[in-house]
Length: 140
Image (cartoon, rainbow, N blue to C red; front, side, top):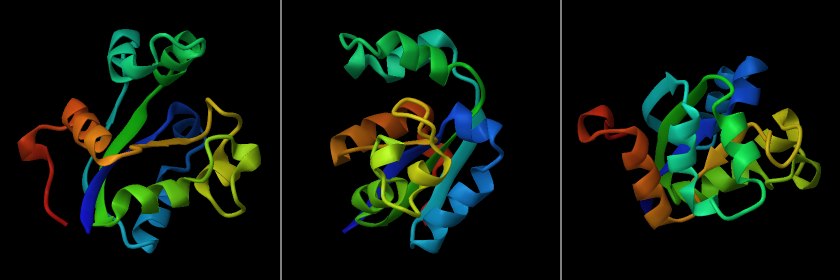
């Protein structure tokens, strides 16, 4: 099934200058980039995006980190894009991620783990609409 998912190259990976390598890995694994833009989230925007975590202990540090520098947001499209993206990213904790995954290669810890990806179709739709309008995405 062809799906779309949101991908974020987080501030730590942007600082490491690995955006191109991360996007290359998505494309090399059959995912098409149908929209992309670089932006710098305000703390308020980061809090709105991560509102699902507002009652968790890491919410404050997560929103501070995600607003600490530029990010690259993109829409990835392809066969089972959500699961494929999550496989390419690797486990949330880089220390537990499989060799060759983005998080294993570029992440530092559970929070500064290089990338974010949607976890389900409903989440993907909401996350994509948070960052992109209808005229900003292009069919792969």
